[in-house]
Image 1 (cartoon, helix red, strand yellow):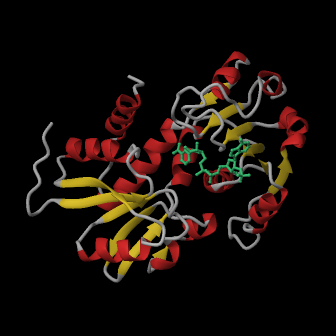
Image 2: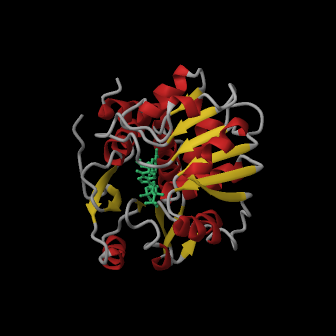
Length: 288
Ligand code: NAP
């Protein structure tokens, strides 16, 4: 379908670097077309060091709102006039919108993370999160929202793990967080309800990799959920192995859809066409 851009067309977008492989433009533009909203969603490649200038430019050009992706999710925060308590707690902003006095920011990754877990019945007592990077922060906040009683973050670098743990000390979310090295993982698994991969292990093109092997997954209770934030490929090797153990599996596609839907709703104040967004994403990923 052709998009007609007129003098009244509103501009939304995403800043990051690199940005050319972002899946948000096809997903958000499909939604805008479905709604008949006179707007367009554009990728903006913004180098580190140019974020302040970029925000001033986007403001002057009348852009209505934008997403923020790697590597700017933290760098953008001091440049905003308002940041939601959730984004403060996570320490990262992925969605920015225009207010009278300047840009305001929030974090919709947390909502995206939670969305596919909402229907999974009883409270998840122990969550184990593999990796301690940016996505792990959204996962920790999401596990807090889901009222997990224990949240373990497993990493390979003791110093980074300690910094990660310390960074939550002042958080109003007060996560019941503990950190562990990979060699402690096997001891944690028999009582784990939710195992989340936030490392890039298994991501295209390294599709034969998995953060854990079948034997480790076999230690999980039969009711456990294996959740991979990776969305390409889908399913990953991790989720394939989990399926052979008859575990419930969740891939990263729905998180991507739901964080985008929450951002769109903020910008245009309309209910987003989630099915259209999901289908556009799957088509783009070659998932049918
Ligand atoms: P990141 O900030 O770079 O963090 C990656 C984490 O993985 C780090 O803690 C890193 O450890 C760890 N790691 C990397 N390679 C490893 C290895 N070989 N063995 C063990 N640990 C390893 O990246 P991110 O932004 O959190 O993203 C992580 C993944 O989540 C990516 O695949 C991304 O596509 C996915 N993601 C999905 C969504 C979604 O909507 N579905 C949203 C965000 C992210 P060190 O700190 O020790 O280097």
